[in-house]
Image (cartoon, helix red, strand yellow):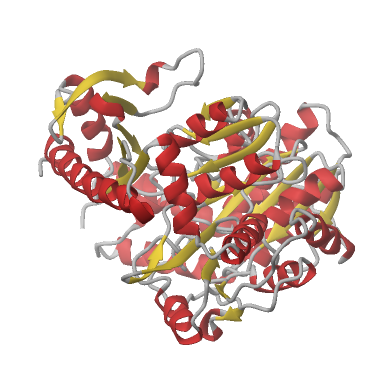
Length: 554
């Protein structure tokens, strides 16, 4: 068999990687792939070495496995060493770094490797006492006065994935230029054998958990607590935390989905552990029907997101992230929460109208809480992907636990008045118009097709979508006074409609975010809002059909 120069270089790189891999499992895995490649068998070796995992919307994230394009101990060790170099170079030598981890495969191992590299570099390392939610790590950074924090999690990704989120001392995730500066230092890391390794750091006491629980529970004010709640942590780490917060705030214990109650890195009852995915909430809704519940709430596996379902005439209905965001904003504005209300550009335009009506400033940011969490004077922030920041003073990131508590508080208040969350959404629609949102998401096997799709839309943008004229086309890659550059396009349509197209920061997808605004005619018992919803659904379907043809060839 003739071996090409490129193949020879690839095999040499793989052998060198395997030689310094400290993990017996991934080393054996890579050696087996190399042996198959040497025999001429088809392998994924080229993909494993196609590049290195880079800091995206949510930090490092990818499938577990051997090679620089996978999550493994070599990648994590290099990431930790690069972060240590960055912190040292930016004046934080000898500072404290706190490390958290969820219950995914190898999360504890990656946390220990990070701790040993950080202590070896002269930092004081604090390790969270057990598997805990991501927002608790974000809380600990500020509470303990740390220079940085690391959370080992892949959030709601599939079971075979893991990830690595980096926060700086303000408690927010890294943004440019810190991400590229850290990446440059990771690339400069030499042989792993030359990296000094220290001990595994000091465990943080349970008192940090108690302080977080009390802080979150304190967000709920005195009021009704009569509410039958069904809850699922989706095999993640939120269960105990949520139960304690609800109890401290005065709610009865929720009915918990037994099959999903305990952390399980294989997520056996769901094909995809994301409450937005079809089927993920089926067990919770069945339990809610059995117990005649008032509300279903869920967290994703690391509990930084919150999902909500409510009963309606057709059974149980999942609320969209934009609907939950509007309800939380309504709740906080009614309390008089002062400050800037912020949402990502792909979220509904409704929040801006609600804030303006209450005399509060509003700001749009790029996608991701690394941007929302940095808004000056933030009072509340959210993004449509079920992420909500309800207590930015203590957690400058999305927090599915505090959002869940406030949704329960709002639902209990509504129930005491003989109403439900859908009634509150109708109230908001009558005041500001019905803002209906939807998504079109297309997955690509060929990653090169993603920039080609964006280029096609840039060179030949649609002139109408769903019968509505495209009045303005904005190329977000050019940036503006309000937004840094990002790969995306925004179409402003007639009658308040809007479409944003952007590549996903975490998956091989192009995502399209649609919004239409329908005025609500006054009618008895909310009939006007119902009619507006029907009209909005038809308009969204029409826009989606035209967009599918324009962007993806049907």
